[in-house]
Length: 323
Image (cartoon, rainbow, N blue to C red; front, side, top):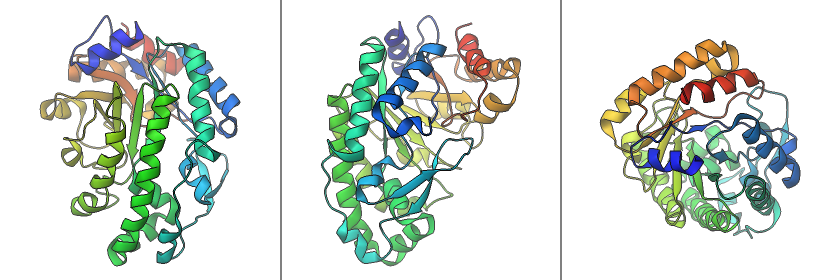
């Protein structure tokens, strides 16, 4: 049933009901593969989602290059970065190819294997992978990456080459570990981060290299994080679906449906989900489905949901989507 709903949505239609997908961080549980997999499977089983997106510890991709991070309580469940490996332009040349079957990457592959064992073959499982330019920002810092991009572009490109290679190999390993597809997240393809021209030069070429590694996957979702995402720039990416903060920034689901026939993921604002009543959550879901007629639509949040979201509000999303 889960795959039937997802496949119908990917083909622009709807089965008995639109699929539902919500995801969150699991701070502290996400430091070990076994506990990370257990809480993901339990969350999926408790709410009956139509797919399971694995959400690793934030910044996992930088650990093996020397990124240091720690969890300090926050609603999103993300970590604070304490020390970044790229402190000077020449540090980009010090990034080395990594063995993606070992270290932090290897831990995340084990999570995928355990999740697959936990849910069986009938539930789509997605691995979460970040765009090379997003990884570069984490390795160097929000403002620092802009400085390298504008003042030392050759050095940044040198680092992006290594990051793209490692990420591509990790994507292939994720598919081999049991993931059905990839949730490819970019936090840089938006007006609040860089210009469109800058993303064309420093984002797009490396994104496409990573997505090429996912070419055989049945489900590839592009998550464009941030205010005013460059969805037109990303529209021809080889992906099956698009996800962004549709309740917080243009375009709306209705506007996006007029611009693309691709599957759209969204409709639920994370703040509504965390802070409003189940009835208000259900109304938002029904409004979203009216915007798309429920066709080619996965009911989802714009990003991770807060870790203190009431379970009854999560249930309200599922119940409203299934009528």
